[in-house]
Image (cartoon, rainbow, N blue to C red; front, side, top):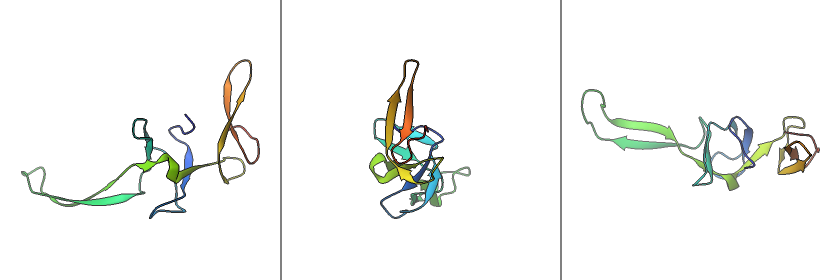
Length: 101
């Protein structure tokens, strides 16, 4: 998996293009991530009872992997992720500056 929880990413497509955020949750089956405060949608809810008064509720929706790019912590640029395999482990590597992520 090229993205992990807590990675800083930039949105490359859609209505929030250019905005940055940290990954809060990953949906593996949908190939999407949840970024708090980004990709906000509104939903009109009917009144149910005293606890659920209804009205217009805002909530974030998941963004597909293809619409985000990982930001390298060292160079700060959006980059693709590569892997460097050593004898002990496998590390994620920035394609632009060759630093470990």
